[in-house]
Amino acid sequence: MQSVSKIIADIAAGRDTPAGAIARSRAAIGERDNEIHAFEALAPEGTGTASEGPLAGIAVGVKDIFDTHDMPTRYGSPIYDGFRPRADAPIVAMARARGAYVIGKTVTTELAFLDPAKTVNPHDPAHTPGGSSSGSAAAVAAGMIPAAIGTQTGGSVIRPAAFCGVAGYKPSFRLFPTGGMKTFAWTLDTAGFFAANVADVALFAALLGGRDLGADPVTSPPRIGLYRSEIDNEASAEMRDAVTRAAAIAERAGATVVEVCEPEQIRRGRDVHAVVQGYEAAISLAHELAFHSDELSGVLRETLEEGRSIPPNAYDEARRAARHARKTATGLFDEVDILLAPSAPGAGPLRSLGTTGSALFNKVWTLTGNPCVNVPGLADSAGMPLGIQLIGRFGRDKQTLQAARWLEGEIAAGPRP
Image (cartoon, rainbow, N blue to C red; front, side, top):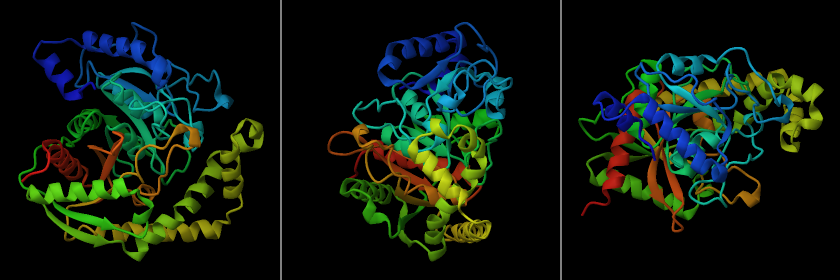
């Protein structure tokens, strides 16, 4: 895989140039994307290459629900075939302003929902790369680009990062802008990022946002809360074993590991996620349902129709439950620095099953807005990636990324005697 950190360091040292790094990414796309199908559209060759800025030389894939002025934006739906926005989404404009080269639009599922798209998992094309940020995760995992932008409304950053074996970072809610993207659920939609490892995704986010998010080495091992909930049995035996192994590795490396039981308010938050998402989606996509119903997949059309039937008082009650879940989530970090949980129920399911996988282990943390990082490095018996999720206190994104980088390094170093 390509490394954001190495590309930037090589350019700074004169060993590489921005144009050379971009050219290699374009060549890698030419070599691999006919197998992976991660890109919906590519920027015209020779356009938009910046030679200055902190992200100069970094080719970035942008999930195709963000508007781009120089490429079509299809939102994963035939409804928008040939649509050409006149302006960039703010996060795309941020990337360009900092010198990144927006090399292409990455494949998304239909309107960032559940219907699988054409992208395959680079580790095994028979398996899903996850969704809805399918192309963003797969393009990084296949070594075509060093970084990509995606979104998460349920589990659409952490889950595909886990399935594809890369680092995925879902920031605290609203830390990065979501304007200029196709809204699904406005109180849940969150911009997120993909890179080869945690240090790279932290550096990319830091340089993109101009924020102190770099995953500097920790001065002391973190206090880890091994998160226990009633959905744990929904994880595969190999996934549960991976979490146990990660906790044991962390403890042997000096971390304090304690079990943290899920409070009722957070369980309730997970339960009401569907109400919040469904109600808001029915409003956000009312036009598509009213005028293009026959062009929607059955699963999305049914979800929007169900959402339209949710009364406002039920939505308001769900929002109150969400607010209580957020307050309760803050209290989880009184005695620990970070929470450890599965990123997904297991490895990426077979594509023949017609699913991009379950967001069960992600959606409550999207509802509460906590920063989350998928830590790669573990695998099942078939060699498919298994992701470990670290969840941090709201607004403590740097600390969350630091802990994730530390754990990733300890996993890579292997078990200690």
